[in-house]
Image (cartoon, rainbow, N blue to C red; front, side, top):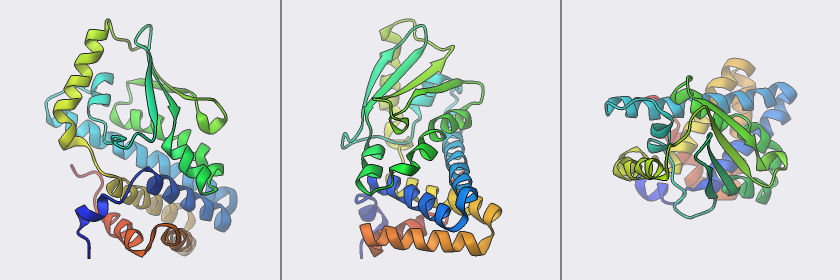
Length: 241
């Protein structure tokens, strides 16, 4: 039997995307429009809590909750290069763009692209809000909504020079190893957040049916061992750092 660390190496963006897509799919099947709304609300919960974890680590280090530190303390790294992100501008606002997206590709691969809008319209704004509600962030374009790329815009924030921008990236290198969380952890949080929102809004019976069916379909794609790993991972406090 694999250890938790060995199992974590088998998880990546596709697991994360498909897990959410299946929860949203079965939410709609069981509870219709109300189920769709619950799936969207679960992304808000997941995103804000993830942003709050980043904020807590930042504050623990004696740092301020600035836009720069939002990037510095971000929890995930695309080590396999499934997504491509580029700098759009540093002034008059700091903008980045994603020209290809591993989540979008995974939803399309498994026929779950219908639910991509639910995730993409909520995740980044919720992450930013969870980190610091005072920082103003907008998603100006989105691949999930038919645009050619995603544009992430930090309103009313800019870098004075590329030197300042590079200082931010150097700072991230210094903390990267202790702030990044693997995709098994992130999948566990997705399931945990969905369960809490669904139980509260749909009731235990409907929510349990949705989760059971989504996890069984996930098992058919990725296997029993990975399904059980997510369930085990979900049974923790995701606001603990």
